[in-house]
Length: 144
Image (cartoon, rainbow, N blue to C red; front, side, top):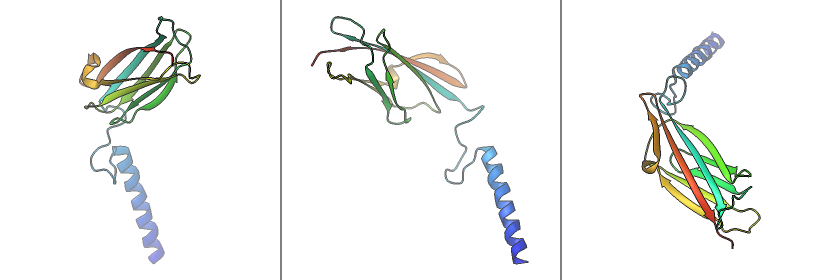
């Protein structure tokens, strides 16, 4: 009888866990999870160009893109035209700052950093279900 009760409890627990998972509810975090279809989402597109002091595009520069609150941490490299581009989706708006750091892995040019608050980003579209932001960054590196 005890084995039947344990199996029954295990089965009911598994079914409830699956059902709660489909509903987007977590036992660890109260309330609905803000990911998945039908949930408002925001998008951020980061474009930029890296040149030297003479305005010549710099290829293969390491660009570190970081935010603190929405947990974006990414590294991209500039192309032959000195340009980089990256797009991100994130679940909610807020007071965050985008941090961009450009490094020359060959150590010819000094690193350059820029901080851009979300309040200074260009809002491309704004609807009930999504908001799109864009940032266009132009950085000029100086020789060491």
